[in-house]
Each structure stands twice: as structure tokens, then as C-alpha cells.
Length: 301
Ligand SMILES: [Zn+2]
Ligand SMILES: [Zn+2]
Image 1 (cartoon, rainbow, N blue to C red):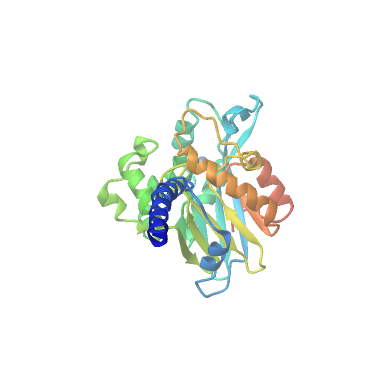
Image 2: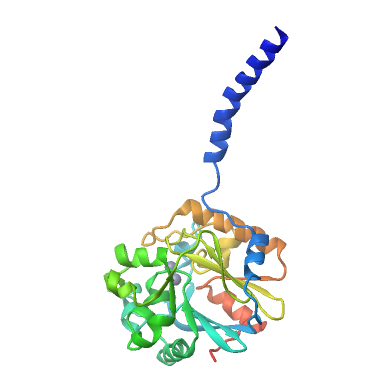
């Protein structure tokens, strides 16, 4: 009889815990990442790691702070439009490709905002001399430089787009001008991966859908050992990370649960990882500080 009781109890426990386990499984975060795994992936490809990372601002958008960080006052703020150049001993890789003046005006939605023509030309030169070009995400200010460009024949074969980025560009581009046909998409190098991918020596890609379906972060270890995380637009300003508070811009539709998880992760990294430099694409305040500290180069090579 005792044995029968034990079996009944076991069945009862199973009946009670099974739905609990299912609920736990369903409650898993919308997004997660593990810095130890990412470090391992970044070390997979042999070769000398990059020597430095440069940033260049080629335009500005003037957005009041309330759009950038939910709950902030409408105080003035500058969004830097930027590209990054990762310099290896034997060549460079561009992260993002900037945009032309018409796209800048379109994104500015009627506002007359600074566009630095000389810097934009430097971006074009750097794209042409790069070994590869890769993207934090598929928004116009990051990708137009390889979609609407007089150098398409030259740039497309070394431009690496993720399957998710291509899907957005083919189906729901931010602006109609960015739309790619299947045939046009085939001119680029299209990659796909699950969570992380080794991209180059010292460099791991981190899938980070949220700001857009095709968003990814770049974890890059330099030859010096210094680590960087280029987070694209997961945060527009590092205050998003510091306050773990997202944007409040009605024209941007995000997966807010995933972005929230990303901000939580970045916030914890920013307090625990002293050797890691987290860089948001548009944070003009942060860029000035990092260039002054020589953690980023302030010009393209
Ligand atoms: Zn964006
Ligand atoms: Zn952007």
C-alpha cells in the first residue's frame, strides 16, 4: 500500500510541476546573451586581431531628449550619424555605410539638419577601400551607402547582409527607396546564423533583433586586449543603458521586450566589465569622450 501511495504522490507531483515548468519555459526572456560564450566565439578565427576602431560623424539629427529616453524632458540633443572602421594590420572592415543627402533629408522629416559633405566623401572612400562592409541594422542612416551608391558594382560583392536584414529590405524597408528585389539582394553576400557567429579574428556577431528584425551587435577584441561592443541602435544614447529605459519615438517600431532585455544586459555589462567599451551608434556625447580618451580614432584611414 505504501508503494501505491508513493506512486500516487509521484504522479501528483508530476501533474503539478509539469505546468509550472511549462510556465517557466514560456517566461524565458525575449532576448538573452552570454558574454563568456561571445568571447569564445570571437576567438574562433585565427589571425591577428584588429589594431584600432575609428568612428566618423558625417551628419547630425537634432532630437530632443524626450524622444531618445522615455520620460526625459524635451531638452536639446544631438544624434550623431556615424560609421565605424575596424582596422586590421592587413585591411579594414566598415561597420555601417552611412547615407546620401536625400536619405538624410528624408530621415530628418523636413528639418534642415547638418550634413557634412566632406566627411560623407571620406565614408565613400573608406567603403571603397574596405575588405568587407557589415551592418548593425537595416535602417536608412546605416545602409543607404551600399544600396543607393554610384559604386554599387564595387561595393555589393564585399557587403555582408544577414538574412534578417535582407528580409526587411525586401518586404518592409524603412523607406521605399531602400527596397531590394530578390535579384538585387543576390548581388550582396548574405549570411545567416542562430545566436552568435565568428566573423573575423577577434570579432563575433551577436544576433540582437529588437530595434529592427535584422539588428546585430558586434563584439570586437583588439590586439591590445581591449574589448568593444558596437550596439548599433539598441540604445540611441548611453543614458538608455544607464537608466535601462528605451526610446519614446513614435516613428520607430521596436520589439520593446527584446530591446528591454538588451538594455538590461548592457547595463549589467557596463558595471561588471571594466575592459569593455560599449558604443552606441548615435551618442554624440559618448563619441567625443571616447575619441578624447583615444579609445576610438576620430577619423577614417
Ligand atoms: Zn536605427
Ligand atoms: Zn540609426
